[in-house]
Image 1: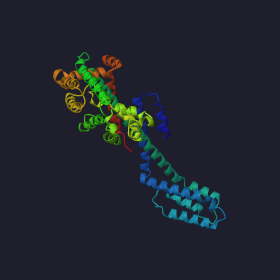
Image 2: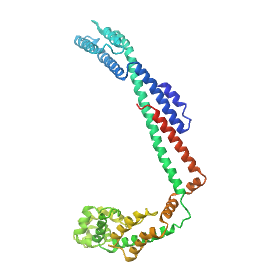
Image 3: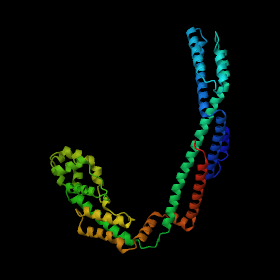
Image 4: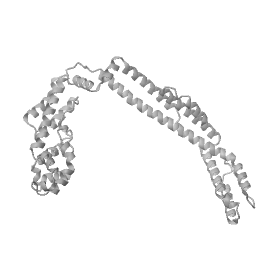
Length: 386
């Protein structure tokens, strides 16, 4: 493993793509080198059996030396029996089998001393080499897994960067001089009107009606209102104070219990149901009924406007509904796809993006990224998987 690490260190100043590929090759070479040694040793299965036998014998020596070399005859006998049982259970075709027999002989005496245990440990050295090889093999496997994982992560990063570059190039093809106000102005006009209407709903209509409007939206998947908390909805529906507006309920929630007692039948209930849901009621607005800008594709916009109209019809004025119909008709009156592409480009491209596109830097970077991805993918495919 030292060779792999030392060779790896020489790649520290290399460009990142080259360094990743270099580290992958180093790990694969190390894996193949150790794999060859493992095969020459009889294969991984035999290697593991030998290493297991070695570690078991070493534990027997380490765990029993003090007791077996002391004055306790019972400990001495039990140790002899364990060693004999372990050695007898070994297959004589096992690599370094003679080492286990020699270690057994070293401690198979009438009296045992520390020197006998040292002799047994030394006799096990040929078997230890197999155990060391197993450690080296597992390290080589882990190193290759780590380097393959790093290569796959790099491929994922490259895929993301390629997608970003392709998106920039696509945006760069848009007509930035297109009259996007033909999209923006009707959408802004409608969004402002529906926001004002919803604010008025919260301020002037009953909370019961407001939450009923929100509940209506459950039937329309493109109207993404957050459902009212169940206990709040039940309270507003059943309590007389539900006839008050959402704005008023929020004001009441700030009152003291004494002041509330002059306004509602059960001040505690209002605190429990309204004050605890203050964030929901405060944040409740017309956002789920507003059209995004840049807008979606024409078909989605039409479906949105139809669903928005079903909900807006319960609280919005005629001018707002007319503005919504105007938005719905925009794809039929303008070069919609071209304007949408221009709107997306104008909203997403930074000044730096535009400069890079104009200079051809994005195309150049895309080519480099694609070449790196292709080279790394080919190399990864050629590398063994542990």
